[in-house]
Every structure is written in structure tokens, then in C-alpha cells.
Amino acid sequence: MPTIESTMSYLPMSNLLARAGGLLRRWKADSEGVAAVEFAMIVPIMAIMFIGAVELSQAITVDRRVSQVASATADLVARWSPPSGSGSTMGIPQSELTDITRVGGIIVSPTTGYR
Image (tube, rainbow, N blue to C red; front, side, top):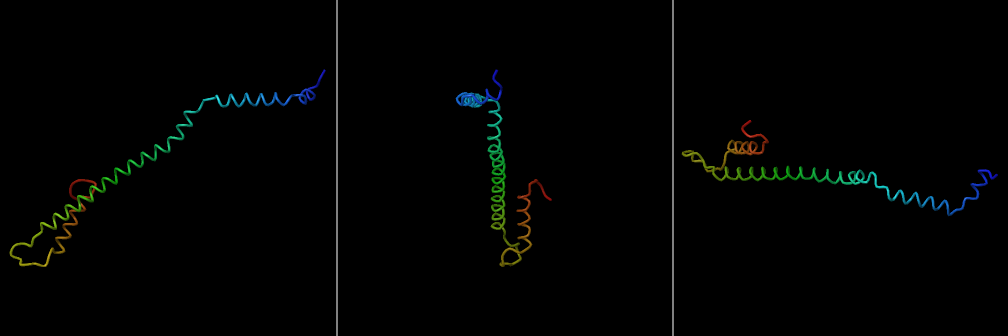
């Protein structure tokens, strides 16, 4: 009767290769977890796209508000005229410029109304 050791020594190499080939084919055919792997690959890209969209909308809002401030400031400066009877031709006084910059701050503030 042959022993286990003697049987192991006579296993042909082709039998081991066949077993390894079978394991490889089963591993290739196994599709469990594919959706989880695909999801893990897509999530970072989608997160970056979402954050980028939020940042882009905020940048557009800031650009719009800066344009509004520039337009309002230019309009107020262009409309300024010295009070009648003052005889001043020096330009816009500092107090008027301070008021105009306050208007710009109100336009830029995220809440509506006065502070």
C-alpha cells in the first residue's frame, strides 16, 4: 500500500498546472463586487465635480456683485454735483466718498437691507 508521501511525490506537474488554470478561470469569471469597485472609482470624480460646481456658482455670484458695486459706484460718482450755492469746484469731498463706499458694502453684503 503506497503512503501519502510517495503519492505526493508522483503528482504530475500538468495536474498542478491544470488546477491552477481552473482557479484562474474561476477567479476571472467571478463578478461579485464589480459594482462596488466601480462605485469606489467613480465617487471621487463625482465629488470633485460637485464641489467644483458649487465653487463655480459662488465665483459667478461674487463676479456679479463686484460688477454691481462698480456700476453703482461709477453711477454715484458721475451723478455727484456740488450743492447749489457752495461755489466749490474742488471735486467730491471725503464725506461723500465715504458714503459711496458704504453703499458698495451694502450691495456686497449677503443679506439685503441696511446694517
